[in-house]
Image (cartoon, rainbow, N blue to C red; front, side, top):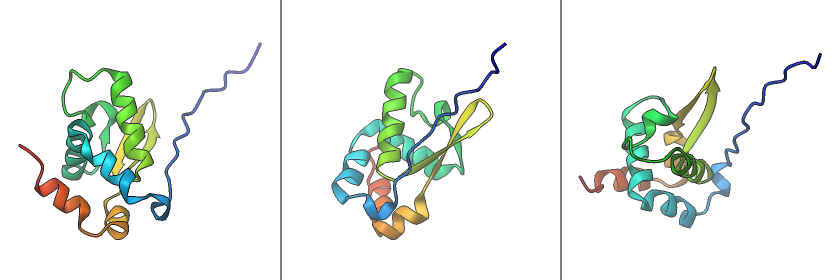
Length: 110
Protein backbone atom coordinates (compact mmCIF):
# COMPACT_ATOMS: atom_id res chain seq x y z
CA UNK A 1 0.00 0.00 0.00
CA UNK A 2 1.45 3.34 -1.07
CA UNK A 3 1.61 6.14 1.43
CA UNK A 4 -0.44 9.23 0.66
CA UNK A 5 1.75 12.26 0.18
CA UNK A 6 -0.28 15.44 -0.21
CA UNK A 7 0.79 17.89 -2.87
CA UNK A 8 1.47 21.20 -1.22
CA UNK A 9 1.37 24.21 -3.49
CA UNK A 10 4.59 26.14 -3.61
CA UNK A 11 4.25 29.81 -4.26
CA UNK A 12 7.06 32.05 -5.38
CA UNK A 13 7.30 35.33 -3.51
CA UNK A 14 10.02 37.56 -4.94
CA UNK A 15 12.26 39.82 -2.94
CA UNK A 16 10.85 43.30 -3.43
CA UNK A 17 14.31 44.56 -4.41
CA UNK A 18 14.05 42.32 -7.47
CA UNK A 19 10.66 43.70 -8.61
CA UNK A 20 10.95 46.36 -11.33
CA UNK A 21 8.57 49.32 -11.38
CA UNK A 22 7.03 48.30 -14.72
CA UNK A 23 5.96 44.92 -13.27
CA UNK A 24 4.38 46.61 -10.25
CA UNK A 25 2.51 49.06 -12.49
CA UNK A 26 1.38 46.26 -14.80
CA UNK A 27 -0.06 44.35 -11.83
CA UNK A 28 -1.94 47.45 -10.65
CA UNK A 29 -3.16 48.46 -14.14
CA UNK A 30 -5.89 45.82 -14.38
CA UNK A 31 -9.18 46.83 -12.73
CA UNK A 32 -9.79 43.32 -11.35
CA UNK A 33 -6.32 43.08 -9.81
CA UNK A 34 -6.63 46.61 -8.45
CA UNK A 35 -9.97 45.63 -6.91
CA UNK A 36 -8.31 42.62 -5.31
CA UNK A 37 -5.54 44.81 -3.87
CA UNK A 38 -8.15 47.25 -2.52
CA UNK A 39 -10.01 44.41 -0.81
CA UNK A 40 -6.79 43.11 0.68
CA UNK A 41 -5.85 46.62 1.84
CA UNK A 42 -9.16 46.83 3.72
CA UNK A 43 -8.78 43.37 5.31
CA UNK A 44 -5.90 41.75 7.11
CA UNK A 45 -6.11 38.55 5.07
CA UNK A 46 -8.51 36.96 2.61
CA UNK A 47 -8.98 33.60 0.96
CA UNK A 48 -8.54 33.49 -2.80
CA UNK A 49 -12.27 33.57 -3.49
CA UNK A 50 -12.89 36.35 -0.95
CA UNK A 51 -10.19 38.45 -2.61
CA UNK A 52 -12.01 38.33 -5.95
CA UNK A 53 -13.72 41.63 -6.78
CA UNK A 54 -16.79 39.79 -8.09
CA UNK A 55 -18.23 36.27 -8.31
CA UNK A 56 -18.18 36.12 -12.11
CA UNK A 57 -14.41 35.73 -12.53
CA UNK A 58 -13.54 32.16 -13.58
CA UNK A 59 -11.19 30.35 -11.18
CA UNK A 60 -8.49 30.09 -13.83
CA UNK A 61 -8.58 33.86 -14.40
CA UNK A 62 -8.57 34.50 -10.64
CA UNK A 63 -5.58 32.19 -10.28
CA UNK A 64 -3.72 34.11 -13.00
CA UNK A 65 -4.50 37.47 -11.35
CA UNK A 66 -3.16 36.17 -8.03
CA UNK A 67 -0.04 34.84 -9.74
CA UNK A 68 0.64 38.27 -11.27
CA UNK A 69 0.10 40.02 -7.94
CA UNK A 70 2.52 37.59 -6.27
CA UNK A 71 5.11 38.11 -9.02
CA UNK A 72 4.87 41.88 -8.52
CA UNK A 73 5.48 41.44 -4.80
CA UNK A 74 2.08 42.80 -3.83
CA UNK A 75 0.68 39.75 -2.07
CA UNK A 76 1.85 36.72 -0.14
CA UNK A 77 -0.11 33.48 -0.32
CA UNK A 78 0.03 30.84 2.38
CA UNK A 79 -1.85 27.62 2.89
CA UNK A 80 -4.18 27.22 5.86
CA UNK A 81 -5.66 23.76 5.70
CA UNK A 82 -7.45 23.52 2.37
CA UNK A 83 -7.61 27.28 1.86
CA UNK A 84 -5.08 29.60 0.33
CA UNK A 85 -4.84 32.83 2.31
CA UNK A 86 -3.60 36.06 0.75
CA UNK A 87 -2.12 39.01 2.57
CA UNK A 88 -1.01 42.35 1.16
CA UNK A 89 2.72 42.96 1.50
CA UNK A 90 1.96 46.63 2.13
CA UNK A 91 4.91 47.61 4.33
CA UNK A 92 7.46 45.92 2.08
CA UNK A 93 5.86 47.27 -1.09
CA UNK A 94 5.69 50.81 0.35
CA UNK A 95 9.34 50.63 1.30
CA UNK A 96 10.28 49.61 -2.27
CA UNK A 97 7.91 52.03 -4.03
CA UNK A 98 7.08 54.82 -1.54
CA UNK A 99 3.60 56.28 -2.04
CA UNK A 100 2.79 54.27 -5.16
CA UNK A 101 0.16 51.96 -3.68
CA UNK A 102 -1.50 54.75 -1.70
CA UNK A 103 -1.69 56.97 -4.81
CA UNK A 104 -3.09 54.20 -7.01
CA UNK A 105 -5.69 53.17 -4.43
CA UNK A 106 -6.71 56.78 -3.77
CA UNK A 107 -7.26 57.41 -7.48
CA UNK A 108 -9.03 54.12 -8.18
CA UNK A 109 -12.23 54.50 -10.23
CA UNK A 110 -15.35 53.94 -8.13
